[in-house]
Image (cartoon, rainbow, N blue to C red):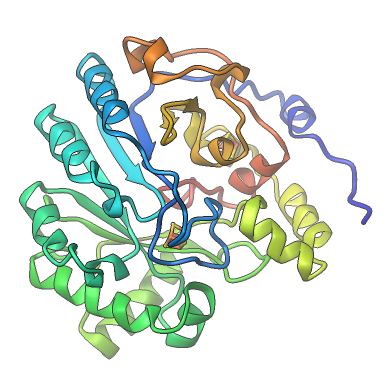
Length: 323
Ligand code: SF4
Ligand code: SF4
């Protein structure tokens, strides 16, 4: 396959952009690849048979370093299905005790797995923000991407969260949804899609949520394999490169975020983590550092997958960068 020549560093130079690190405010912890689902687009390649799970001593060390990092305001816990990991609740509650805002990236279907029935109540008791994947408001599209039955369980999960007060007016109980395109295209405008989601979910199921985040699929791992199989890799890369937006580039999330993997390694973001591209270009682990606050300058490890974050309105774990 012939893909047009492109180089993310050259593109930044062309637009005279220097995107170095600034004060880190978000710590994103990927606690492992174990998940009760195995979605088509998953950049973690997570699934029910995965063995990679964070160990207790790594969580201990993260909490220690976090206590010494006043600039970190948010702890964003992801996976896999992060809640499956034995130390999830400890990491979340200890982070709350340290005064951090905690986010759980939840797939919603986890509420129906044995041993996790009380999870929604735990999340509420600790005022944990829930960011839940729901790639469409239609059953067919969700089941196509996430597996048969995923949509109905997700709807039920959202109703449970609404019942507890999530997604309504309580600022301590935010519930946001995540949309990502099914195939190799850019997401539509976030505000408009949010309106459509709200209308459909309220009318059809009586569901409420706060914000919709649209996320562009990053061409790595399972999604990359999918578009390669479909012969659409070149087309997708051309779309991403030709949609480069310098205003979005200035806001890429890796500038003020640190990502930690289940083994304690530090990365610029979860995507770089999956590609094993360490922070600052050399391997650093949680045992090598005393505070996350020191990562307030220096280079970010960019590569061609970064065009997904800078295309159109931009993309991050909190949705579009420009809306
Ligand atoms: S629920 Fe999330 S982590 Fe699990 S397979 Fe799907 S996308 Fe990956
Ligand atoms: S994929 Fe690249 S641009 Fe996007 S957050 Fe990661 S390092 Fe930054």
